[in-house]
Length: 315
Image 1 (cartoon, rainbow, N blue to C red):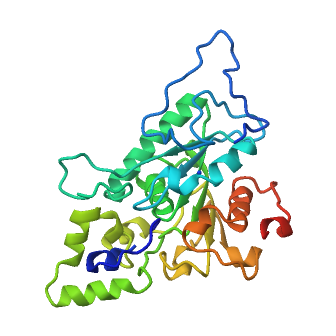
Image 2 (cartoon, one colour):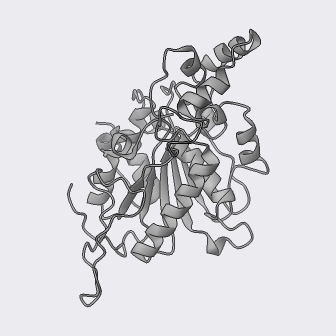
């Protein structure tokens, strides 16, 4: 989850972004062709380092990077550090805002980004990835997802065309890096227990929370029907390289080790504690998107040859 756990009873149970990069052509390589100027539908146009409509991937980093924020957050709030850093390294970076329902929909009355049903948000991500691929001419993208963003990306891979189970050469995604993702559910630092107690005495906490801030938070609870379907048959899809980053200090996606994935056939998984790279580092849930140690792990997950000196990463 991308925001702090609220203190109200409902929120207690669901709790809880420039320099141009070398190696990227920011003008259309064919001077006779029109340069696209309109931002992609759903793109976070206020995020420095991302969504340059004329960006064409260079040979060093041929896959555009799509950044996917978490619950009750947005792209600008989540990626204000990482997006410029990736652009400086020569990546074409794109970020979307997702999960805000139409005005007349009954859930998510507070219209929180990332609050909508994760299955619907995965469809939005699918549309955005296709638009990025068409705009840039890239066959595949890489995805970085924070909190729900990582879980949402896995829903997209499995059910919305991001990966092809029968022919992985047709995958639309090459690498997925997740940061504090709720891959196997969260207890919201044990606050889920409070909600269960309230339900026992007749207070419809989950229903109330879904109406107020959307169903996605409830879907990320440990043992939810949504997660049971998502994880049935294994955690991964063939042909995808996964880097899964966690922090011992995460008090939103809890317990933090629930984020780790088990590799299935044809997939590669690297489960990483931030503290293994930087012993003693204090990195909270949102810190996973900005702290130098976590940023180093993201860069390495996107490009294993992009080794960063530990002393620099831990500074």
